[in-house]
Length: 295
Image (cartoon, rainbow, N blue to C red; front, side):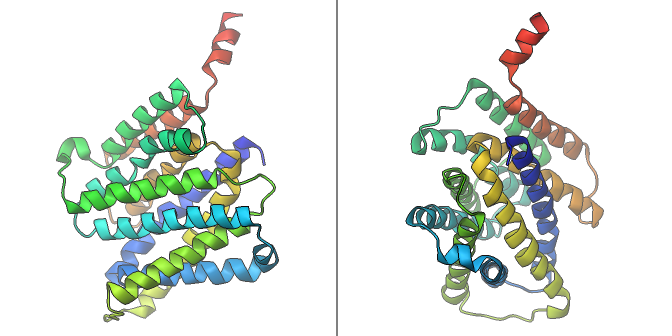
């Protein structure tokens, strides 16, 4: 897979994840708890990926198991901490603080993978963070700080680690190995949270209206999107991957508008444009462009 193709695949992933915001909102409104929702969507993910790719999964290498486990644990930590933090802080704070992983990732990759970021990567990160802050309404509403925000920052660290670990996969390794490990760890984490922190409490869930959002989350956001992410990230450096995945917030806002949860705002236009600009800055080879202009 070429790098440009991998970026397009990851953009498709963010579209699917953007729709996931609506699915999560509907599922929660229908009475599905955080632990139960994570356990159900991860269970679907685990069953589907194993049913389709069990030959590759059963023949996974020690290295594939190790990388998949590390990425899965970090990803599971991100999902659970994000869900917990969202209960104690504002939507704007949660969205903005979660996306701070784009700042952390270049440094994580530098420490773990010995990949020194380029100056343009830092410029792209700065532009992206401003865009995300505009999108989340931080400049209008401010950014308070409470225990929920600490959880949100911790979840950003988890998601960032997951992206870096996935970038360590060998190009010849089959994506199903990493996908299965991420699915299994997510299921175990959701089950543990449901049993020990929610006491296996089953509230009055409107299953008739909750089932379709849960299927979307399990088969779409988890199995399809995360499998595509695992497959594509072998060909994209962590810094670029984090910037591409920021489009999740843009598409999430778009879908929220289409489904009537939010109204179109100038923040969406300006913030989304800045996030697009950050990806351009990250990917354009300015030295080559300058040489061509000078010829």
